[in-house]
Every structure is written in C-alpha cells, then in structure tokens.
Image (cartoon, rainbow, N blue to C red; front, side, top):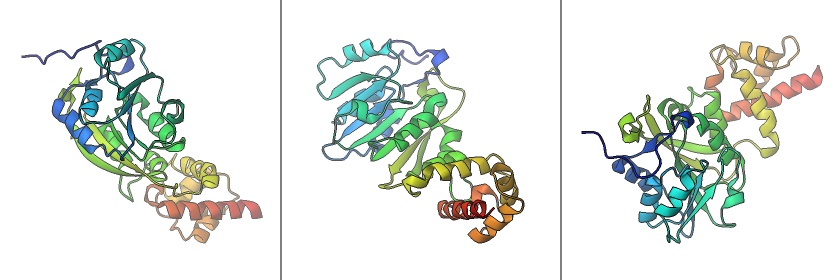
Length: 274
C-alpha cells in the first residue's frame, strides 16, 4: 500500500526537494535539539511544515525560513494563529540570522538541508554573526561522515567545520523516510559551536588559504602537496615542515588544527626570508 500523501504542495525534483515524512525520525530530530531557556529554534527549509509542527508541539518558539515562495502560503495557512511561529522568506546560503531573528536571544538551528545547498548553508552559519549555540542538520550520509570525521581522516570540509564547532554523528535516515525517496541515505549531525574559533579570527583567511591549497592533493605526502599547492622558494616546503616539526611523509588529512597553525607560521617565515 503506498504511503499517505503529505499535506501541501508536492516536492519539486528540479530543486532537489525530499520532504521528510517519517514521524519517528521527526521526533528523533526534535529530541536532539537542545534549546536554551528563553531561546528559540531557527528552522532552515520548513518545506510543508512537517518538522515545524513537531517543534511547536514540543513547546519551542520557532522562526522558520523557506526559500521557495510557493510554500509560504501553505505554511501560513497550516499554522494560522500560532503565535510561537514566524515564517520568513529567504535563502539560508546568504541570509544571516541577524537579519531575521530577534536580537539578543540565544538560538539553535535545525533543518533537513537540500543536498546541493548543505555546505554553503553550514558555512554561512559558522562564519556569520550571531552564531547559533548548536545546529542539528540532516545531510547526505557521505557528507555527514566527512563532517564528523575523526583525526587522521580529515578532509577540507572537516577542517572548515572543526575550526568553529565540535561535531557528532547522531543517526542515519533511510530513503523511504522521505517523499519522494532520494537515491542515497541521509544522516543527522549535531554541531556544538565553539565560543571562539580554534584559529584566531585575524588568521582565518591565511589559515584556510594554506589548508585549501594543500588539500588539493590530499593523498600526496605533505611535502609534495605543500610544495605544489603554495608559493614557497625551492626547498621551502621541507624547510617549513622541519621548522613546524611535521614529518614530510605525512598526508594533509592527518594534521591537527594546531599543526596547521604552526605550519602556517613556518611557511610565512620562510617566505619572509626569501
């Protein structure tokens, strides 16, 4: 027997829409959301309001952001008279929480993120101000594994998040939990935002320039990827690695944040002398 059709507009394949329909998964997501006293939930991608309804039923105050204009009237009708909900229009890839959330209130972010937009949405929240205290997002399972990768298995995505937050892989979600079912599994990840980034803010641009250029060849030994990815004088890569105390035979994915900072300082010192 086919599943009961969800209320409201149908998902649009062209936009990569997959509306979460499994009530058990919805309840698990809401249970994972830890809202501070006096705070609110910033829901990204409200869709037809399935998660919104469960958040409200749990007693939370919600500001729901939705990028697709055709879904806004449905949300307004479905939750007419609900004083704890504000529905706003906007794209979470470029709008900042400060533009739509009440000033001064702590908040957490939650959502079933479109696969194609997950990375820029997460980056926008981590790099912007004000920041959420925590985020609970559903993303493609392979992306979730990268976000929550352990030391020694980092990717550029891992590093871009680790600077700002601790991550925890919570649970997987099968395709049949959605309407329509996607071709891949999803996973729910919790992000606990650090009070301050692990890299000083004034060094973030230089830090990520070094890391991103070196990760262009992540499987190469660090002396090769560093020498090919960044401008250093002849022999500069080995000199910088020696000064930083990093074995040149290691790979980029094995370096910690502290080791990257030390290596950045060493590279800049080598350049300054050349």
